[in-house]
Image (cartoon, rainbow, N blue to C red):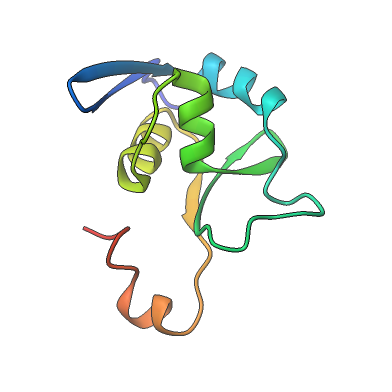
Length: 102
């Protein structure tokens, strides 16, 4: 378990605070990505409990922030100790996704 108890991130001019407890609680409002109807255009996921959740949906639900970018979401969740990973194939494996790397 990560010793970090809170991750802060900024969207626009507002700083939001994300905790592991808020993240776990947010999963009650979201359909897991590994459900029968996964979103076809999402690549970055976090493992919370026994389910996968799209990182942006999870961070927005847990923090109340809007328009969180993928990089910010995945870094905040990783800082809290949640396993974060991308599903990739073809050129995503060899070149990465330009909007999600760096």
